[in-house]
Image (cartoon, rainbow, N blue to C red; front, side):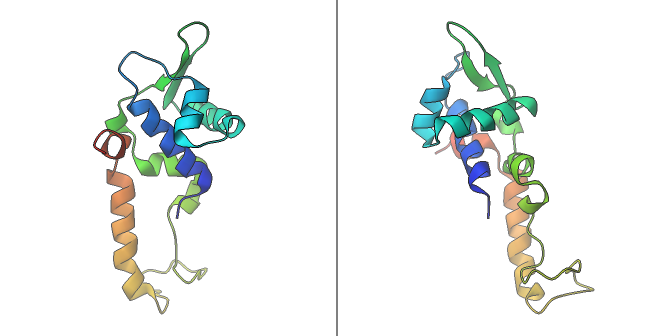
Length: 134
């Protein structure tokens, strides 16, 4: 359900969450451990920095580190940064209307529970949950 870019960003953040406190991680190390092409990772890290999730330091001992606690970054926040409104799937059948209990598509009654579980997972699961407890 997530784009490859969102998945890469989450893996990069998990790597940073696993970096010992006070230490920075080099982009090449993140790229290698997370399996992300280095040039693509640089663009992802720039967006994460601009959004306030990552800090960067240049020079000796420099690199990337989390700008906030990993338990404050939800998967949904990251997905919405890269996927926008597509991070929240709409109608299962792609209907153009709202697809709610009042204007339901033929799959709505079964999709509703899956959708609610997905949203709950995305909005309550943090980088710490998947990066520090694995």
